[in-house]
Image (cartoon, rainbow, N blue to C red; front, side, top):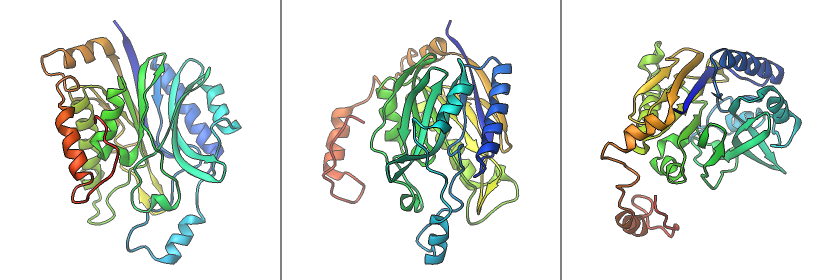
Length: 304
């Protein structure tokens, strides 16, 4: 038996850092009351996300306004992250913030407990002008924690199967996917359950869990910030693609207790173990020839 209780939040975070800490403290209290060992919070908890996303039709005025409204840039070993470490105790917590590395900013996720930082990740895939505000990360790496081997992603990363596969190949049993995933910017709907970007969000979560046969824990922002309206839909997905717990299109805390050994064993020992049955010899040939679809590429070839 390797039972692990996991809680994941759809919660609202903005520029007010003290309000953010109060929200984190309340979610920690709820998670502990449920005997959780892992709490996954959204992207951009400390200091909030960007007030808008750019694109090809963004005006120069809108771009400059967005660049003037960036979240505070914090250091991994700074007092802001230390404050969450001091709150964590034996609870493993994953959350996101804007990281400062000298003058460079990254959209970063960190996993920690009361002993300190267990793992860090800088967002690799950047949508809709996010590259104007953040530099991109350059690696996916799993890491060991008291509850098992974990990996992290942020938001748009979930649209890329290769990203989750790299973490699975590095031994991740649990992947936390932190988001500030908004509703669609066009063809908007009143009911978030009908929103097409929410539907994509949910499909990606289930697909990434299923194709890698691991536990997928997806947090998200809630409410609104600037021009963005977030779809919530925090969830825990099992290795068969089954949703074990979700907040739906509402803020809240979803919780599930999982026997990791049993869940992973049933998925991977049923005759179809996706990681074992890959054909990287074939994929290598395809990537070497085509790289990005429609474009010649000199990208380094990896066993994705």
